[in-house]
Length: 366
Image (cartoon, rainbow, N blue to C red):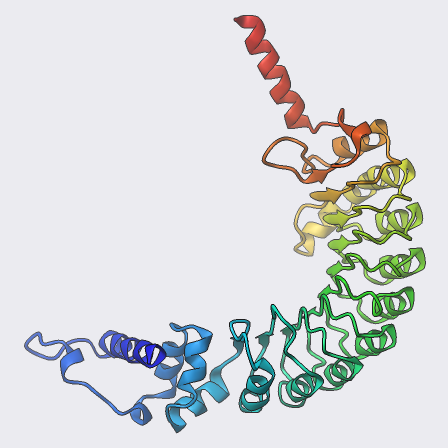
């Protein structure tokens, strides 16, 4: 089997590295052939670090030494390569992996069911990152289980899990208060103003939130986030058609470390929102030194998507672009995205203007 051969090769490599050569110059590869059970746990873990996750699963069936090493040493695991019977694999593996901190269960076709997530919550209490994206079969049972069993979650991706309710998401936020990165893209039932109020109340460390295409999200929910999550750095509101300038104004006033904002197809956004972001750039500058002391990077928007925001006018967007030098319209550096806004074609970043002037000067000189 290919995976077993990989283990053998890694074993020989590690033994050569650790034991070196015999006296007389003969390499140890030809003379040292320990049983798997004789290899120190530390060496087994180093071998595991050299192979892929599928090979790690095979190793678990080799002998007790491998199983023990994996059980007590494995902290990161991805099963996204598993195209069939992922649910069964989780049920059989996870009880043996109590030290897991990162678990990636991204799927192309839905396989996971609630019993798998309940098993994760029962055994992996140190879990910090979990990816359940596209798990269409999961219900609220999964979120309730995670709330009770995985309070140390920092990063959670449940994008596309369309069966979750806002009540279950609100419940989760009350227990998983350390969340910093949360992906709710496409969670049309879970992402509501009610859930966002709970997240704003409970998850004060939140830095990144994806609410793409959650069309029940309105101003009240976004304002709750702005008030409760002042360290928010990235917020995707693409397709949240109910939000207005009030949401952006609240973010501009309270989330001074915001770096990325997605407003695609938020057609109720007007110049008022753009002016608010630009004006609060000055307020943000006054806090840069305090931010540096706390270890923050230089503040200011670096990505803004206002595509299809057709109510915006060039003066407002140009002022915003001038206020945030990291926003670019020039080729290859598009971080101010304005596609679908035909009235904004005159908006250009500073380097784009400089390039145009340089080209004009060159033409005149020749």
